Length: 113
Length: 113
Image (cartoon, rainbow over all chains, first blue to last red; front, side, top):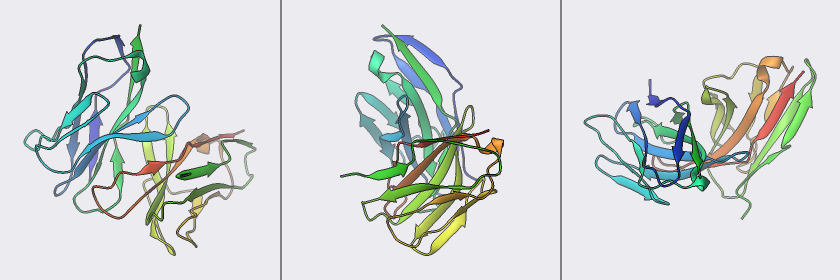
């Protein structure tokens, strides 16, 4: 079945540091890939997505590139801010589905001033 | 635009009690789903629905029932609450399509004593 593996947290960075959160996947067909963010006490929000190989999703300074050859979708940001502190989830909808999301376990990011 | 609305936000139950978590969306989305979020486990799919009158089981369906009589509403019922069901529950909805992100409610924090 489909699965998503993302790096274990927690991750603690200083403001303006570079961020990478690794995500790899196993899926049938050609999945769509997503990053969601969950701020404290809130539900999940879509951060970015990519729907085919070599697509780059971007939003709020975050980027991730759909790499089919390495089955990866790593999240990056060049300069993190305190307000980026949250839990980040990598997720996919497998090629055989129109709906069902499969999530990674989440990575807690804390950014210190 | 209300999006996905979950009620209640917090609830404490005693073992053996029953209750219904409410979820409503006003975006005319076909797909709705329920997840539970537990520490270190990410989000796990409980039940989902691809349209009114159609429901199916997800990864962890035991102890929960759902129904989908209208497009807008997708309630989750706990028939006889157990301490293992202590969790944060999220409802989500999306339009049809493998590239469509899901929209999440703010969650219901449920404690079973």
